[in-house]
Image (cartoon, rainbow, N blue to C red; front, side, top):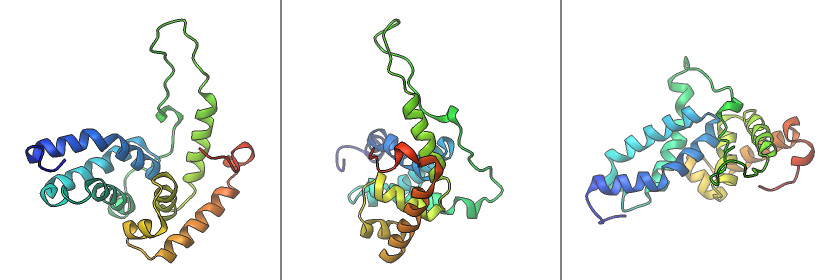
Length: 183
């Protein structure tokens, strides 16, 4: 993206290309669509101010780290804010069909149940555990990359990951057909 136009054009192109991925990542971290958008917006505001310096490096990595930092410090800075409770109405369901009326649509209820179960299980984790799980298994980062992104030791990532996986294995929401399945 560097050198393709003005600073504003380059930043706009980055936001258009990567914001959906960043919002999805943030939603996995916090479990709330509105808060996820706020986290990404704040991270993008900070990135814009430093765009000339980060544009040549790894802008996605920079903004992703800013989202993680915002997520981890959200409660410390604003303890009086409302807490996300998770709501089925927040799920992104696509019940229509582009072909028109009368077309058969697959029943999405299985996917909805699975997303609700995963969301409920993730909500039992601490912020650090949830961040480690999302970075390791959703973003597919290594332990070393996760440790660097969170600013902790690799051993901390390993222990947080082990605790989180133990909690998820014991979660009643994920018992039965979810155990051992891969997305």
